[in-house]
Length: 294
Image (cartoon, rainbow, N blue to C red; front, side, top):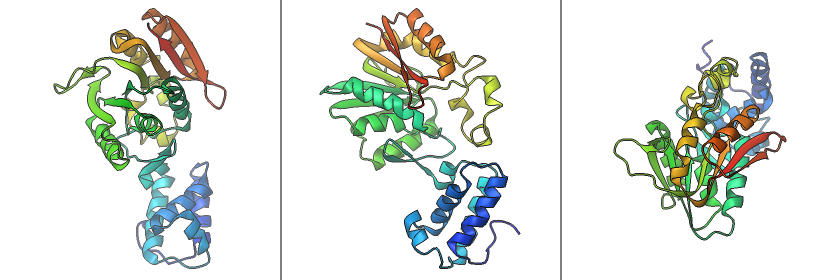
């Protein structure tokens, strides 16, 4: 039977159990949880309300929609793309295949940015490669008097970011610009200088990309992930232009692959950084390189 066809109504528990078994066989790690989330999505219920009625059969329409979602997850389409949303730093964000799905480890970058901005009544912050706007929005929500620019070369990603910014009432705090690193596209304004530059740039090597999970390799935007043979191409470009875009005392915070943290630090030093630091994520691996240029 076509998974999208109407299926017999059943109670949530039996639907979830059957779906979880299919997902496990397809190699999905969090099979039961994913099945719960997808059934709640199909039934337009919270997971709590879903389980409050776990012995009651769902409507056939909801069961059919659930079957279609499970079929897509079996093909390893990311859960966040199936639901259309992702939580990051306490914010619910719209996501779709035009943007990278925000990862928990990136919250380390936000923590460090907020520490840099603590107590400052005014500051100008740039988020390079903003994607869905996750980093810029998390900073904006937890600061006052800080103005941000979210820059991305992908116009489709900026459309998603714009919807997220508007939804959370941050349009007066966050400007979105189409840029290739620091260079405005389509005749946009010069970005100027900033007190803080943050970025989670692409840092996967060409060889590593071929070994990524199907969720990432087959569905997430390749241009937001891959950075050449050594994974450093974007860091080189950022380093070359950073000094001209920071105010005196300005700081850059860059998310990195822990295996290449030293190489990124060396690029910052070669570009003139006067002090360089590294910061671990919750797993104890170096996740962010900090560079001060003045």
